[in-house]
Length: 250
Image (cartoon, rainbow, N blue to C red):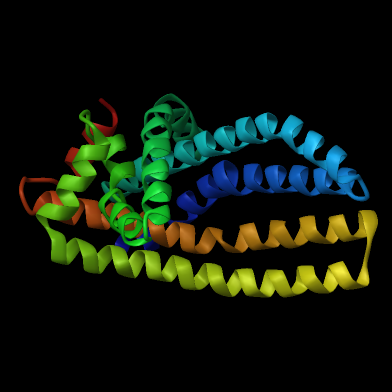
């Protein structure tokens, strides 16, 4: 697809700044917290974990907002570059900072919907993952509820949307499994061979490398979600890169 050839560098940099770096920082903090709790009694461990749950939740929400920022910025940048406009990373981040809050709020609702659905016999969660996959472009380019809009777009064009989104998520899952298996094997070896600070340093490095490699499927997912959104929307109304570019700047 042309969107990958044209915009992969911009999308990758935005994902690096908005997703990779915050995720590594959060993961490193959790790893260091684990070292502090090593050797603690069960009562001390429970007390410390309760005391750290709120800061961890706040940190996760911040990372979620930065992810929404990166997605919003990446979608707009891809559309702008498709009509021949030059978009800097700084400009894209500034746009994401202004508009990312909208996707962040709706994204939390979508995340909870998927999680609750997975708890309820898995299938409802898989349906929610499919139905809400277009929430990011809907939040970026349209003014209404992106939650409802995503469901309408996916179900109005069920077969075509299902095929495209299954392919998109299948690549993500397979890539993530391979990276996770390799990273898990290295982490397990480090846990056996090392201890204390040395083990934590290796674990942080492994997590950093894994997160960096996972930027590759992230670029793929952004492109596939955008292309599927344009296709689904174009089935019922006129839509073009130029019209999306104007909608993004409203």
